[in-house]
Image 1 (cartoon, helix red, strand yellow):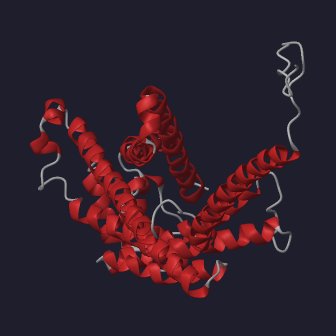
Image 2 (cartoon, one colour):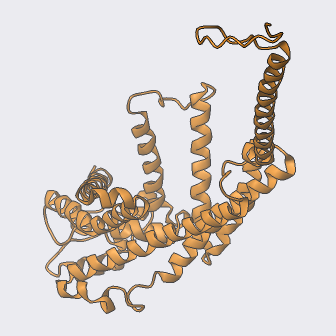
Image 3 (cartoon, helix red, strand yellow):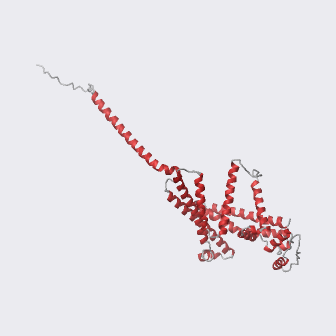
Length: 380
């Protein structure tokens, strides 16, 4: 009697039973749920990222130092400018002191720190500190005020820079000498005029006659030098005392000679006694006679040590080069090292060569200026 239940087909070649629609719907729902969870996590991460970016955005959008706070940025600029300014001034003083010792044939003293950087001989520390406070205080307060104005006004405009720079300019009070403050203020005023002129010229709004010439800048420099040297000879009281003394020491012409030239050009009486005493002190054998109302000052009064005008000009240029080269080299080499220390460490010989080249160029210019001025001013 056959059974009512038949055995299942165990043939391996037979196909598996079909999946029910309910099982397919369940797996599809799980897949969609996993995708939705992943999208939700991504959306939450993106939302958090945007929130963090927005929190920094108000600061980063206005300030250009998103990595540090405004206070840290201001203090960093203050310290950096102070150290650089202090280092440049002290370095120039030490190098000039070294040139002075070397000029006195005291080469061994260059290794003696007591002579090289002693308080008695190197009196630049207070001045260096004041210069450091000047530039450090200016940059630090400038950046701090700009950040305050950005946050207060909620925007960045050129007016912020103007206001911040105006208030930061009070750091000039770090200099205790009123003449230094006046000189620096006039220098900055001249730079302001130059910047305004360059801006107007670049926009084709205004330019001086001849400025588009190939050597128009040389013409402008010549006119400026003419005004300065005229003031030095005819109106010396209009120049700062330190500037007059620099010109006086650079050009090997004595003060009584300049006084005589000034009175001669004005048609007034010459101080014969003072001029004759100067000539006798330089050359006792000189028999030159100076008239009270002379139409021209004789060459023997200008260079009593030599009878040749050509030799006098050569000596003047050589003496000017020897006196001013240490100054120009110090002013060139020290900033190269202090302000570009990494470049100096990478290629010290190239940096030294560039400093020597620029110093020789500047000193040669000043020496040629002195020689040409004497030829044109006294002998023409």
